[in-house]
Length: 499
Image (tube, rainbow, N blue to C red; front, side, top):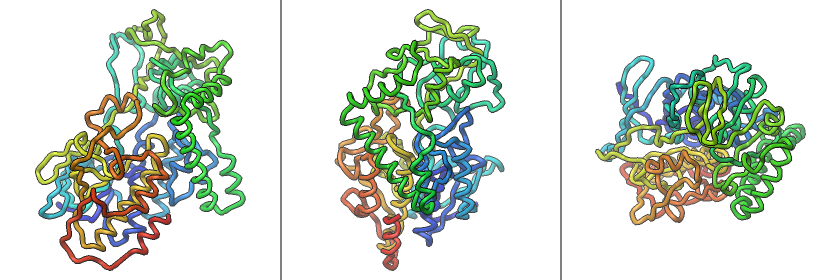
């Protein structure tokens, strides 16, 4: 059995829904299918079930550009985000294009056909099908959803309690009145600790080194006021741009004046911890703000948990697990009934799909990113990924609009194949954070160049100009013409750029 479509969207999370919306609205002459390997939509927001799971970006920028976020909470939990995604699909009718339980194993490009052949397993029916597509839009992110990063600790088997990784949370886990140790100090740990503190006997965040934790209101009072005075769409647009500009300012300030930024963040945090708390040991990082992502504490919930006495921080290294907990290098032993290994995520590019171009296997670490969307030597394929220093959806919406502009341009000119050519480009790492999950998989991370359009800006304002308004035909891109050009559809491109 073979299914043929113009565009094959792989993944039905935030970026997949964005891709479908844009094609439906701006490239309505294109057929498309969405393949989702799981039995439901939502991606990250459906998969992860650990206590308190929420966004660490405000929903005015994590929400779509085309559909207002109207809840009072600007920092939303996973169920609220999932509800927002379901409502978006319901209102738009895009859900009918999704095929569930479809695991993509391999995609082969043929320049003779100018077509992708995609090997897809139906995991529910235990069957295999070949899909044919003229263009693939990968909306799979860059995390490994099959497993997280999970180091082995000495004498783990000696521990008599339960060890659980947040990515595979057991929803029936009873942690009431239990002693819990969370290994890690990233966003997941900073979310879990206050979410569990009210029910546990005590919870300890065990970290090798501190991270920056900043408190921010869970509700945006300006957004609430604007919704009272203006139509939802207008209020959302204003609030969205205020958030974009504020995020950009904070990042710029931290990078331009790191010493000042560090002092401000630490002085602010210092006022929110108990008087006898060892602040220098537990909350003063040895790196500058935004060398790694900042961790968000909505309404200061993490600091409130510390002040309650139900939560604490231990800064040390692990010597070994014991029957009753964890022995530290300092000699101290942390008693635990449950150990949560919030040790990080694992990277996986291209959705772990085996890509083959004209018989040549493609390795993700060998290709160079073009505008943060396409990749050298891979024709007719785009990947949606978000920012490391701003909301995920900002870049995904830009990517979706670029794909539509590209498809419309190819129709207008009669092109059937487009590929980026990185010959002569000086390659550098594509991700600019010092985070462990990036360093661990540096060999599989695609490269970038040293100048546009090969260099990622990590800046929404610059990307907006390049992706929505920049030329579609530059020296870095090659098109192949094999059919009769379509009529000019410049009005559609104007609408895309204006959204």
